[in-house]
Image (tube, rainbow, N blue to C red; front, side, top):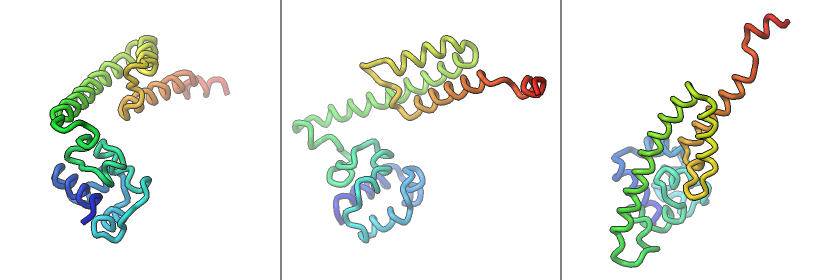
Length: 163
């Protein structure tokens, strides 16, 4: 069993899911995933396994050659697994804050569109913490822009009157 197969097995065990579920959650082709697990594809292209790496929140290199249980252990001085644990804790906090930000953003966009624009500018303009790269934040920003585009169009009733 090569390192990639070991890491996929670790992901399955860590999340307690089937190969099918992993393929669905990651967006990876199920047949390809099964062929990698069975050893029919020994060294897939990076782009092929990129969805799995994104799902596991690790790099493709770590997925193919590292250890998914301790993805940053090789790059850290020995004895720094505590730092890795702290990093995971911080990632969980960022995700929690992102959910709270989403709720705030949603309510603000509904009731105070001008402030929602300012909030969107603050999100995208923050050089220290660029939240606009977070997948959920991208969805909210896209929804805000879509809402602005729809608000700018006349309603069906107004278009019917002008015809």
